[in-house]
Image 1 (cartoon, each protein chain N blue to C red):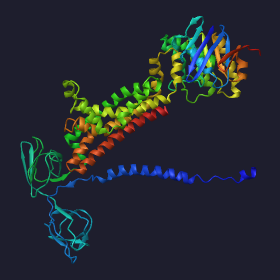
Image 2 (cartoon, rainbow over the protein chains, first blue to last red; image 1 turned 120 degrees about the vertical axis):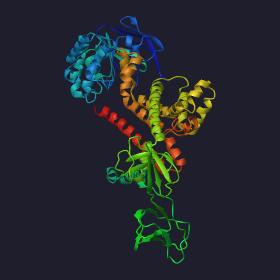
Image 3 (cartoon, rainbow over the protein chains, first blue to last red; image 1 turned 180 degrees about the vertical axis):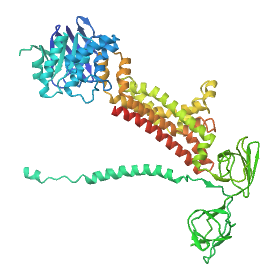
Image 4 (tube, rainbow over the protein chains, first blue to last red; image 1 turned 120 degrees about the horizontal axis):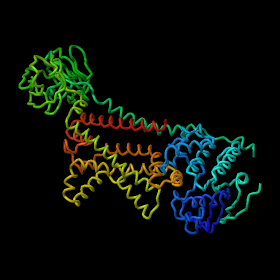
Length: 217
Length: 421
């Protein structure tokens, strides 16, 4: 469960106040809103990348409001993927496991499993430079899911993709996320994307979060 | 409306591009010309050993008949024309070119086109070796004319037929017409040899003082560079990633060594070290640590600037992702940020190294200019100039150019490897 309770965040002169949101386990939430309305700020606050000035963030019932990002157990997929430029794809996937000093055999197995699920096995030795937009996002998703976090935050992961591969990647994302059994929060400004992906829709308008309700296709 | 748009034309881009090319090109030309001038100015040939000047101060007669100079036939002379000379007449030929010639007549005639002008040409006879002695491995040569060579200079011996004698030797003793150098205990006396002075580059490279200064320069610049990076990477990262009270003040403070005249940096260090314990100032001031500290004060500021720009250009996003993946800040820095900053580290290091190599003012003030002790390459150049040896100074400058070029090529090569891998 992801629960954001009456959150206040200040970013420069911009104040987001009284933001609340709740996603039950395994739900796929989509947070919508215009550019600059503070979607990313909310997401970063949940991930622990931005200090909050009020409210609470609960992940699976645990108050993580003051925990460092590393201890929150959230996978994070930023907008452009932000793949580490100096690491081959396999090392990106293995990164979080190597940090945790997980035995090598387990790391290898997990990397292979993720690569197979995401269809990037042939890219494992490549550096990020030269990967297509879709490939980058698949690697970024795999990297975020490597240590099996229970929660996943994605910041417009599909906005830079071409129309013709969007369908395929959407499908892949939903499948993978269902398979990994994570509770996901996905930011987008595209209604079509929101309709295709989300179980639950939220609208961020004028600093207020409105639940639009379960997504009805 | 559309009709008006059809007639719209922009003027050509050519003048603008031309101005850019001319402005940029003139600077590029100056850079290249400057280095090339240094390289071609130096005479790389050996030169003969010459005796004293034989032209007396006089004026050309009003009737353009010239000035007679008496020479010894079958000796070689070095002629150098001045601003008033056309050349000199010998054996019916008018010789205009400067250089060494064999005298075929007892008398030559200096010719000028400015009657009543001063004689500004120079004739110098080549000295001959008239006696060779060997005593306990030290050779002493006697010349028929004063040779003008000084103790500590180098002389090249040829045509002796002995491997001990041939080669470049340091002159260990001189009188007006004698000079000595070590040839070694095993060598035997030889009957004949010819002498020449090696070019200033060889003189400089063989000089123990300059060898020491090359070594001190290389070592101190490298130590300075490592120290600078050691400090610049944390400061650059801190200034790039964190906001704190007084950051603007710290930023200004960091720029002080850049804007402060280098001499003042040296003086300030000297004054600062009056306030430290004696054992510390004794160990630093006027010793080699002072060289490193003086270089460091200036070079580090440049490294800090470079590192800050480098970190500014690396998106925080990478660290944020690393944090969510389980890193603390330190792990994120080492595993994600620093590998991306490699190019910047290299640039900062090269910049610091080059700054340190050229540092002169603060070193002169804070470390002094003691030979074999605190002498670095710029100091050598300065000492050569002070001793009136422009060519020696140029030779030292060439050594500096070569060293700097080498370091830049190495740095660039490593930088390229990163880009192409």
